Length: 99
Image 1 (tube, rainbow, N blue to C red):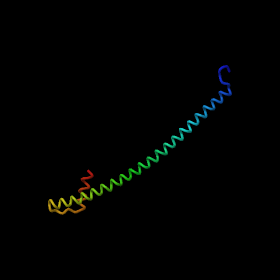
Image 2: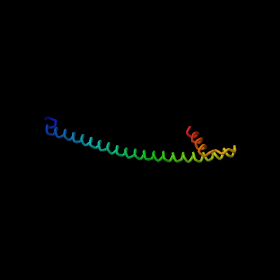
Image 3: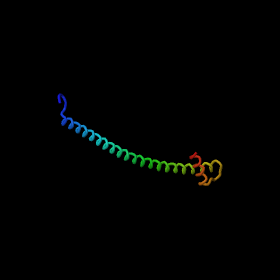
Image 4: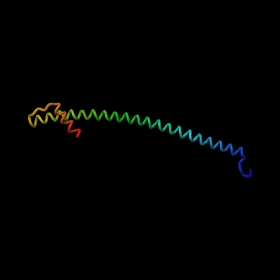
């Protein structure tokens, strides 16, 4: 035993290292679980925001098409004297905007 640890002390040190390793693993698993939970929460917020943006975009697009259809009918009437059916004007505008 000259300059070394006794078998008992060496065994105790091994258990201490083992305990530290287990604690580090447990801490890493806990951190990983918390990061995943936070990421899941962020992803839900992103999905919700994207849905709101799609809804707003759809509403804005519908409003633009409605205003453009009205303006198209008015312009055709002023320039040519021809009255354009509102449904035809809306269909023409929709076709042009969705090219």
